[in-house]
Length: 113
Image (cartoon, rainbow, N blue to C red; front, side, top):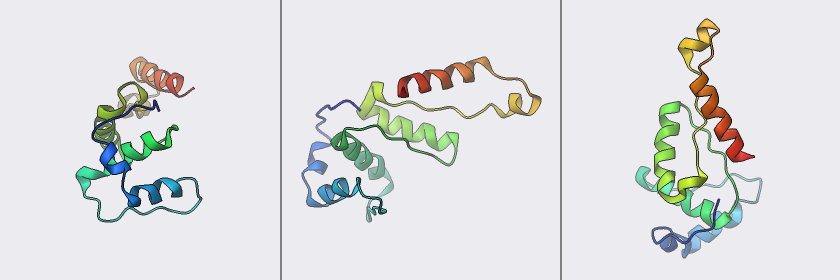
């Protein structure tokens, strides 16, 4: 993640609750952020990622949810985030591979490396 200052992240990063969450990221214990409404989840995540200044992998239950998360985080991290597309089920079932999906997957892996 690139260390950029973002006006929408700064107010979150100045709270004591945020500092506790950030400090806990390095520990093996589970961290809980309660009372965060749906629209704030990825805003808080973006603030934590920016403050931690290290890469993160977010695993979503579906490709649709992954794309929604990507759109939320893209606002803050333009060039630093990507979606690893799932296999095309039509091609996967038939044993044929989609060149476009393979290309997209390789681009994401290259960005990570």
